[in-house]
Length: 193
Picture 1: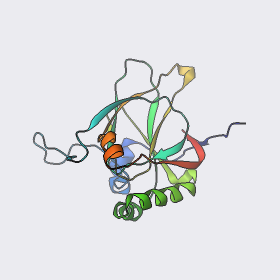
Picture 2 (picture 1 turned 180 degrees about the horizontal axis):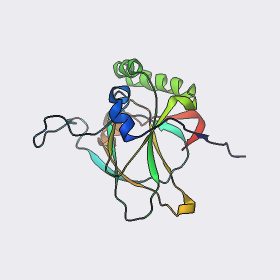
Picture 3 (picture 1 turned 180 degrees about the vertical axis):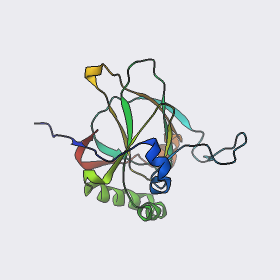
Picture 4 (picture 1 turned 90 degrees about the horizontal axis):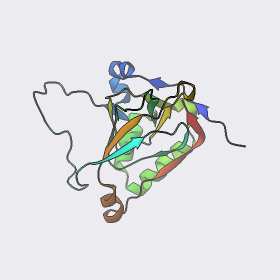
């Protein structure tokens, strides 16, 4: 018999994030225009990881049991889809304290993975945050933050999966040259919205 998924209750909308940005900024950042920006300035530089790669994501997962992490940030933006109506995508992250993330960033890669895995195995559904996307919202998931993306799709409304694009450093360089494999962490339950 398939395991029943836990429905997440802690859903953050854009307004909630803007009002409490410091509460979430160590986990993820909604990419808002920087203050005093007159025209253009780069945010980050990835000399060792190459230029950012762009991937298309049709988010047709409504349940998930695994989170992943990377030793670098990634950006995910929801874009307009020609399919109508569309479901709602969500970023899922554990509500880890800023101190925990700071310590992770100082550990070597193997210790970091073990520490995240140990933490994920003991999580409860109440310790997960779901950020609700809107079309045009881009989120930077910070380095080493375990995360996943799921959607809520209403078949009774004939909704289609939402369309997102993912921007991240070249994984081939990290896998082949630096020998970093993307780790996956199994939650003690499945999650859904």
